[in-house]
Image 1 (cartoon, rainbow, N blue to C red):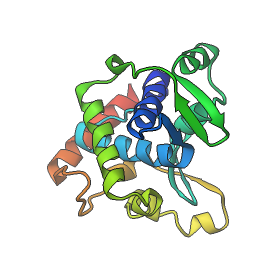
Image 2: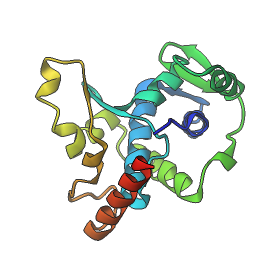
Image 3: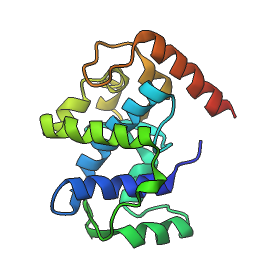
Image 4: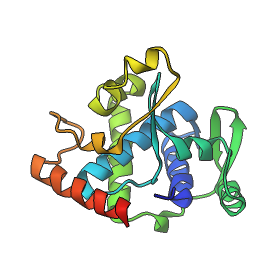
Length: 185
C-alpha cells in the first residue's frame, strides 16, 4: 500500500478551507483524516489516504498523513506539490494557500471527507470522539508503556453499533474482502 500524497495534501487543504480561517491544526486534521478513512474503508472497501495507522495517546494517527502535514519524509515531487497548496504556519498549524484540487477525489472520497467534517461540527471534542472506536480502544493498555502501537487495518471492519458509519454487517464483510484483495495486489 502506497500513500496517496495528493489526496492527503488535498484533504488537509479541504479541511483547512472548511475551518473558515483557511488554517487547520495537526491534531484536528489527524482525527478528521481517521474519520474519513474509517468511513470510506467501511463503506467502500478502501482508504482515502492509503496511510498506515498508529494508535497514540490522543487517538488513531494516519502515519503518512501526519508526515505530510509536518512536511517530513515526503518524496521531493510530493513536497513541491504540497507547497503549491499548503503553507506551514507553525509546527502544528498549516494554512491553505490555494483552492482544493477537487479532481483528485472520487465522489465517495468527497462523501467521506464531508461526513468527517460534519461529525467534527457536531462533536468538537474530536479526540474524545475518536477514542470511542474499538480499533483504537483495543490498544489503550499498551499505550501506557508505549508511545505508539501499530494498528491493524482489519480492525477498521470490527462490527460495532456505529451511528457514524451506516455500513451493515454484510457490507462490512464484503468491503473487508475487497480491501484484502486490494492489499494483496
